[in-house]
Amino acid sequence: MVKRNRNIFSIPVSQKYQISMLRRFILFSAIIFLFIFILGSAVFVILMEQMSHKNTEYGLSKTIELERFKLEAYVNSEIAIVLKMASSPIILQYFSDSNNDEVKRIAFEDIEGYRNILLSHSLFWVKDTDKEFWLDSEFSYIFDPEDPENYWYNMTMYDTEKYNFNINYNSILNITNLWINAPVFDNNHKPVGILGTGLNLSDFINNIYQSYTGSAELFLFNAAGEITGGKNIDLVKNKVNITEELGQTGDKMFIESKNLKSGEIKYFKTEDGKGIAAIGAIPALNWNIAVIQRFAFTEFLKTGMFALFVAMSAVILFVIVLFNIFIFRMLKPLIRIIKLITHNLSGLELNPQTKNEIETLGELLNLTIIDPLTGVYNRRYFEGNFKRIIKLFSRSGGALSLLVIDIDFFKNYNDTYGHDAGDGCIRSVATILDNCVVREEDFVARYGGEEFVVVLPNTDIAGLNSVAEKLLKKVRESKIPNEASEISDYITISIGGTSGVCNHMHVPSDYIKCADKALYESKKNGRNKYTFVGLS
Image (cartoon, rainbow, N blue to C red; front, side):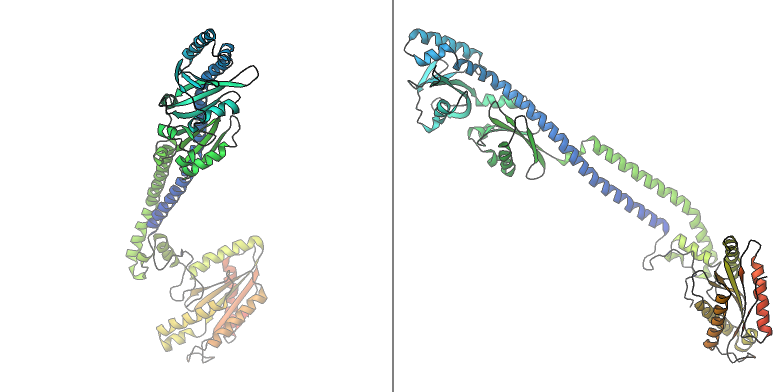
């Protein structure tokens, strides 16, 4: 009926689904907690992954450095003894003149002394002149350098300056060793044979893993990618390539090993993204050491950070629950008031079941300022708000205008058409007046009976006169029949107006008296007209 929403205490809510404010708050709190929990979980997982990667990289670097040190320490002593033998004048003389029994006897004593200080207590040699393979001072067999199984002989004799390593199965001796091979040169730096030591492969691998207590996978591999150390000794015996054993992760390890600098350690994620791999070089062996640490979600659950996250989540949940209890206790008196009011005023059709507590209270408050017949503001709202406007404008010196409106011959209309028709007439006039007031700060109020007021803040005399003439015109054009009127066949109105600049001396009655005086003049002069009286 009236175009503007007068329900100033209302809170917009969906008409399709309305729940109590308490339930809405609980639901909102639950959503907030879930949001915080999910966001916190995501942040926790990311941070834990980053921290885990950093800690894992640090742990892997320590593993590589420690195992590299142990391996180099283990073989360096053997290498030093082998090199000392290869440069021994007695052994060189024996390799050059094997027919001298005295030299042979002294050389054998020297070799036996070296063998006793080797960790493996094993020593072999082959003179190039007779190709006899000697192991631990005992002749074993005639060596054939052309046998593909003995590829290491020519490699050591002609391509090696100091020493080399190879893991090889000797079918004649039926042993698989890690061989340390060193060429023996004469005074003209011509190779005259080979000597070295053989480390039992099983003992060598066991020595690596015996003291290793880490959870990471540990591998050794040479420049060709062949695994030279692993928990599974068959990988070493069968010379399985690191790329075959570890797939794409092994491929990356092999590629990265080509560009490793001395002492450098490189890190990267495994192909499945569930682990970190690290690789470093072992210069003493010309090998590489690779370590892989796999991640398991259960490991996160054992960390102190997870316990901290659970504790923080519990604290947040406790705070939210505590806050909900606090809100419930605050709303409890309000809920009781709403129930009491709606029970006693059940005839007002508030229908609180479809509204929350605040909306219901807002609707009750609106009943105190809205005229129930017309839907415009009532006299209580006018008096309170008009007083506030005057006080506000007295500080700024703004212009304030007021119209007082009366329906002409309304008593006669009531007597002729009845009270129901009279109520309808008042509603129609209220609608017309309200439709003519378009600014947000302007408002219409029912002052009493058939009398209305229109408050026009920031409006001078010219603006006031324009609004008044518009009201007169619109009511005339509505052509509401009134046979009881003495001046027209239709409903008409009389208007009195006043306007002035507010000051601190003004009170609402100043405006009302002047507007009433003007209204009296309009009635006195025939009604259906507007009269202005300046604010005194």
